[in-house]
Length: 131
View 1: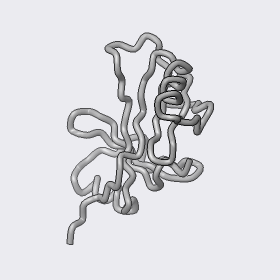
View 2 (view 1 turned 60 degrees about the horizontal axis):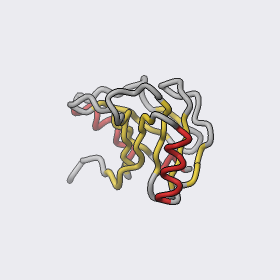
View 3 (view 1 turned 180 degrees about the vertical axis):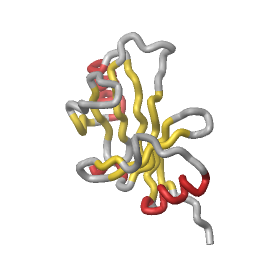
View 4 (view 1 turned 90 degrees about the vertical axis):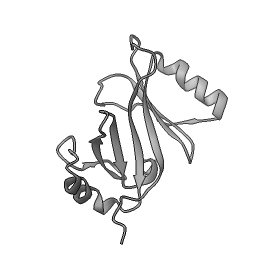
């Protein structure tokens, strides 16, 4: 039996942006994205933030005007169909779980880990956090 975590899709991408309002406008005009969460604070970066997207794509935008170099993926998330196995699989493989374990949100739970390159990966119970 295969005991891999069953990632079904990239759930969301967290991005640093130089100007939050310009970025929201860009994604609204190009893709028709809507604002899902108007004020995503507090957050780990302690900066203005919004969550935008549609039923299939979620972007979490964090305003960091002096970001350098350009482009800044803070983390990306996978929806995991067998979420109840995440903690055990990470422990089995020696993967460090960040932030003290499961993080509970209003409609979902997540586990944050680092991959071998240092990228933070969020493993989510419910796609898009149930937004």
